[in-house]
Length: 137
Image (tube, rainbow, N blue to C red; front, side, top):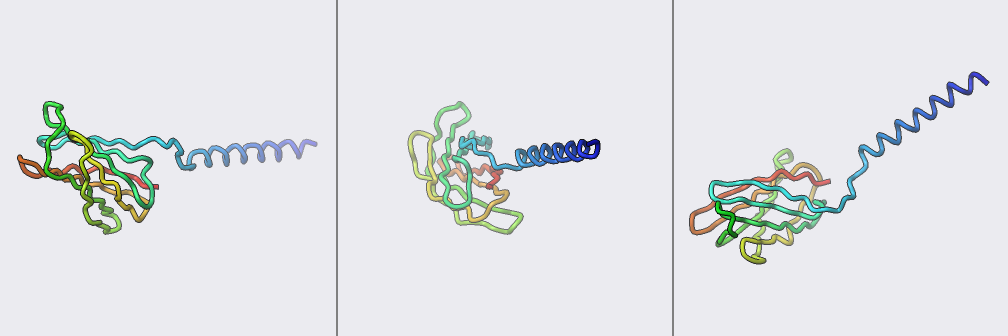
């Protein structure tokens, strides 16, 4: 009987360790949007995407000026780049949704991993860019 106790204890510890490791590496299923913010010289830019994923994503862009009012821009583009793999995709034009709000609805991320999303803003005062890190699982 004394030999079974250590084996049972070892088995219980192994199951516990396996459970903790599984919990740590299990993909998040929160389903909430990823929201990132950045500032340029003249604007504050907020980029949002619902659960970034492999394939087609829809990016929301909100832009305000230095006083916090919706920015008036001529064009907004979203350009995904994966520097580690040398991938640079064509910019996607974000269509206006309202004052200071834009959406790039058909943005494809063809590979999981670390991406940089470059948002380019063009308006009466020139062109600016904000770069956002984005992990795609």
